[in-house]
Image 1 (cartoon, rainbow, N blue to C red):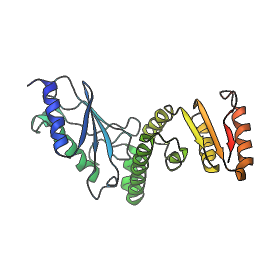
Image 2 (image 1 turned 180 degrees about the horizontal axis):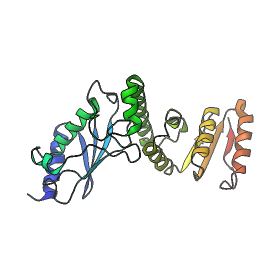
Image 3 (image 1 turned 90 degrees about the horizontal axis):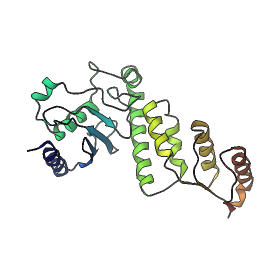
Amino acid sequence: MSCEQEICRQIKELSQAGITATQASKSCVKVKMWPPRSSPYEDSKLGVKLYLPADYPLSPPEYIVFDPPIWHPNVDSSTASLLETWSQDGWESDSRSLLRVLKNIGILLLKPNLGGNIDNGPGKEYQENPNGFEARARKWAYCMDDYIQTYGSCSTKLSKYHAMLDEVKHLAAANWLGEELDRFRSVTLSDSQDWLCFRQLLDWKPNFKPEVIHCHLPKTDEIVGTLIEKQLLKCSKFSGLDNLSYW
């Protein structure tokens, strides 16, 4: 059986196990997995990208990336890649399947390997403040998952960013959010809260420039609307605002 045929067979095996998997490219398999119960991530569906070598399954995955990123001691906070990987020797004794790889990831989600490669940020918090670590990991996974579900329905409600912006010190997460933000083609500002979030986004990512900005504000927020217009006109990237309206 060729490598490509074996990958297809293993993707079917994942589907039979209730795991959503697609082959994004010749060397990448994208997976949506439910984390194990009792882990901080249990309420969120996690995205995982497995990058495979040309001779897979004879050799283990080259690297594994969480997409979107998660807060975990064995996950690099700069790249969102899993720091725990398989050596060739370790892979020889394994069952050489993506399903087994995901089961091993599930074990790490339940109990990080502090004796292996760890990222200092989440690793230090996990050891010094386990309750704080769990709360942050749970919140981050939930917010990301909630955002994806909303974005999938083409919503542009900026309020989804509120719960996530305080986490942008996590470099991989900040990069992920930035890439998502670049996909916005239109923005709807429906209340003062949207405007505050929009201001945060402009401060955080100055080159953010949606093609259309719709301001639909109640008459009670007309003063806020005027402030929005003045602020936008101050930005050289916004030549004008033609869609300011009140209801």
